[in-house]
Length: 587
Image 1 (cartoon, rainbow, N blue to C red):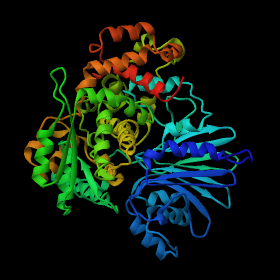
Image 2: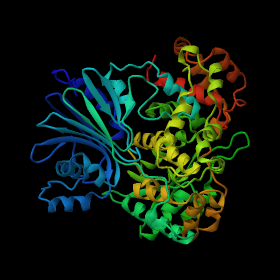
Image 3: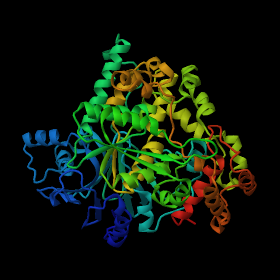
Image 4: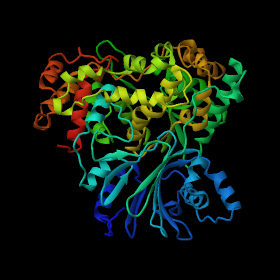
């Protein structure tokens, strides 16, 4: 969108569209009028006909829009809008988004159950409206400039357009090194790229001025309507909400599968889909070759669940050599640098799954929403006012003071900007206990820009749509109101485990908590270490001067020995950032 009276650079928009082709391999379109140009890459999930193509202009010629994601209640909304006098020419949820905006304006987002990012252009006023779903499941990156605004579903698409300030943001790098690669919206590691925060509508005027409206934030307090509920009643309420969330995510004109790790969360999704009568449900699991004495798969659990519910189960085993070979493609698929080992797993698994289905449900988010991680009891054990300090002690990879030996002086903020972010976030009203404050931060910041982003990036790189029922906004609202002791019970996720006991084999519910193990990365297996060394010793790394050379030498001298406070491989964290910058041509 231009603000200076000039026409948009359609060639730049086409380059952005080309970079997004993997996310939408089933169709593409471009539209321009006045100061605006829009492009879209389509993944056909709902209304497979050309009537669902985008960019889409409503029948009255008032609005043109592009939309990414799925509005799960689009059929009910279409009937409601029909009753209000709107006419439809397709059966797509995109058209429902356009008509909902015509009817309710920016408040349309409050009617949507789903995951979405969209841009709508008002022909008459020249106004542009950008919006993102409540939990930030679908991304929306922005490259602002005085005379224009560019936006896209991925950061590399903005780089493809050119003319982006690719200097590094020291505050974002500080967050990256403090929060195991998470960078909170609106920042990214690049000064010239920002991201629209979750649950936000941005209205951009023709002159470039804009206003943001945050339309959703659940209160992490005990609510009167749930007063006096017993543990069994909470269990049943969570089960009902999860059942609804899974059912909503079945809507599609193509088959829907499940990414089945064999853990509680994905197993519950399989059980509930079986309960709904889903026949020939396809499930998918991935495992890795053992390294350093560490097992690389949890097939015994995923096999158990697949047998229990009679799914059409697919297993993929990845040798360590394949992990190192897949690293470059995985990093290329990252909109932002991500260090979690399972990012490679999701990329490799998504490649296999995309050959069978276009849509999967995934168990992401349950640990943050229902307090499943082992550190939550520590976070719950202090007074509410002491939570920011305890959170930093428990969750951060390293304290601010340690970053002086990691970063070159010009990249080191003078203050603990990551600690200050946590303190300010936790000071907001609406979190009753220390655990409530931690879960609110984890669910609405850390989750969005780590596991959620990871799953979207890796699945969409193969034209695969991942749906996350544990991030159904009504389920999140219910969980936010749930008493902390019910979530912390039974070693974490207590109330969810009680749900599991009604539906799953005991071995799945009572198993030790699993993580997606990728031993080749955790133990810096030979080919992975070779790639890491290449990145850190490359001329670009020397020229960039991001890290202290003495620190990098120390890490390379003992690749498997240096760990962050949270146990992550410190060499991997440093190398991944440099590898990402080089992969995306950032010098």
